Length: 69
Image 1: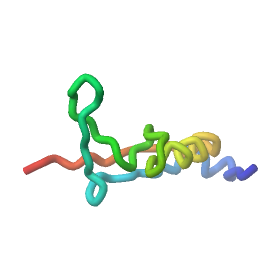
Image 2: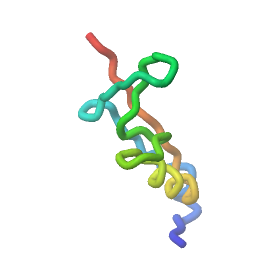
Image 3: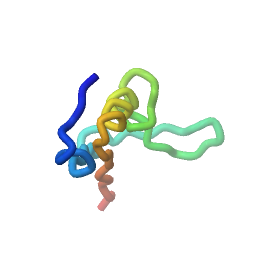
Image 4: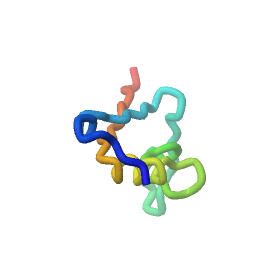
């Protein structure tokens, strides 16, 4: 198992952005959702596995959303 030095724990944040991977689809109820390359997506193309690894190491995760102009 990987571990981080105590001084590094809770000081690191991994941030992913939507600049290149800003994809949407409609869910079963017709709502538009962001779906590709998200921390929550567990299908191929999601980052949930990486998210679990970062969580186990005490690294914070964040998402930098973009706003349409």
